[in-house]
Length: 304
Length: 294
Image: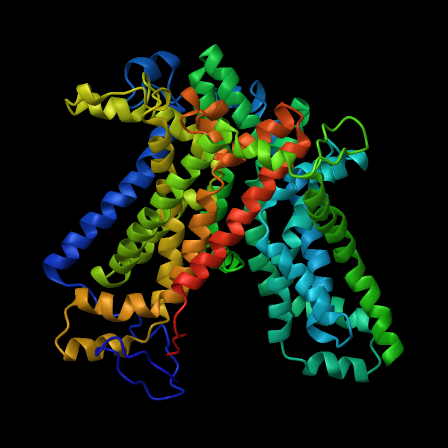
């Protein structure tokens, strides 16, 4: 254990004593006036974050005249019709379904391919193990922008331009470095006894993976899955380039197009309703799985 | 045993390797060649032009204008986002008795919203007539400060900057809190017994022990400042008035898919790659000191 001596405040801690979170980790708690000032600062930022969102939801219920002449007041009536118009006429519903199809496919494909590869890399010794692992790691270092043009032509030459299959394959391939890296670490951390016992009992390696290891890896798959879901759901540049047909737009594309088109038609209320509908799925997903999402996304960031 | 083992390896590794090879490794390899061609996407043959694309780039005012904006973002965003996030993280952990995690739930909202949603939402906040911002200024009696935020070449880049800060802070609050929670509490206890105030404890304990997190965060925000494609695309179409908010990534996409100059666009992509790698490496070296274990 080494501790840098830049600060006389740093004290030695007995070796091996875990820094548990339960034990007041993170330092002293605020008291009195300091606590009030802290609440003011935190509340101010919270308001800054929440206010635009609340304003958007409120505005989504207004009539166009109210939006224009009294942007600050509550709506005179709760016009649910705005949402129906956004869902049907502005096709938000259709775009959402398109996104769901693509993301369900891409997240499943990524998890399946990555968990099999990660398992092989984590648990089997063979000559190409390290080279393959590092080949995946390299992908973490490169920004997607470099390959945007060549990817476009690979997808076009395979006849996959404008298809959901094309998007699913490209999303999955792009996420493999993160997923393989994350899941290899996870499989390495799992105990081996159960798998070894099963092998001795004559179970095939495939069976051991699908019936023992994969169920054991569920927490890791969930964490990676949450990260992948949000990452794929919020993609914009790949569909922008690879999915040009307006009828097959994904949600983010549809919203961007809607913002331009409804702006011209000045159907503000449908636009705000559409924006609210677009924002809700990920926000609800987050509110349901707060801690897991926070953990999953911070773990995902470490890939950088 | 040996034979059976290898029967597993091939089917387990092949799908991932094929997918990765076809849609990641092969395009990246191609990119490094296409950048030296004058390819316009029509014919399958790509005429080799040597360094011509890069020479053209060096004299391309639109490119330099965009790169200048990325540089400004690179100077401003990491410092702003990470300072705010550090302060808020420390306050939710140490400044208040309870409720810190509730604040963090709200702070984290923008992280789960797509950049397109954020961009469209802020288009409305900044809207000159129906916008929240001008409306707020008006009702506070500050009507003189009303602006056409996204239509003013002097303001549009900073409006986008503000949105990037708004969107970025929450994630790093959560990230830093995770780091701060792994700092043992008795360090603070000892500091307190030695008579240090919370401010001194923050500088003397929290910051030094958070260095790994800060390093990752700096690289992360820095790479974000080199991108910004979606916000600019949504909030300043075509790079904004007088291209006052143009960024390299948007220009690259425009050169490729707007003007079909695929060789030239890929050269811009290569420059972005070199900048990103240099940035990561520089941040890594600059912030690297003796590793702390605790």
